[in-house]
Length: 50
Image (cartoon, rainbow, N blue to C red; front, side):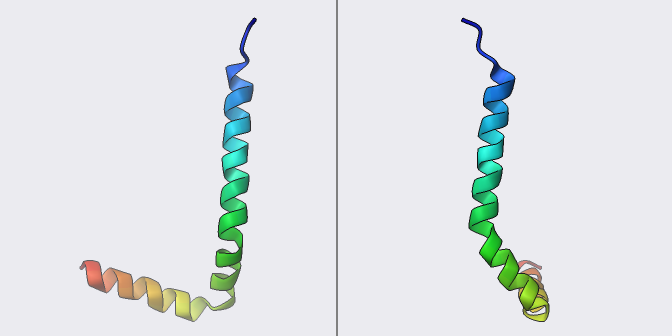
């Protein structure tokens, strides 16, 4: 029996992409609603590291 590795990899990657989209979707929607807060948060992170 021959295994179609390409199909297995595609299924795994598409499943991972859907999981990321479902988990990160609400967070990204919230971030896009409040861009100034997001930029301030990102700026604060840079200051801590620098």
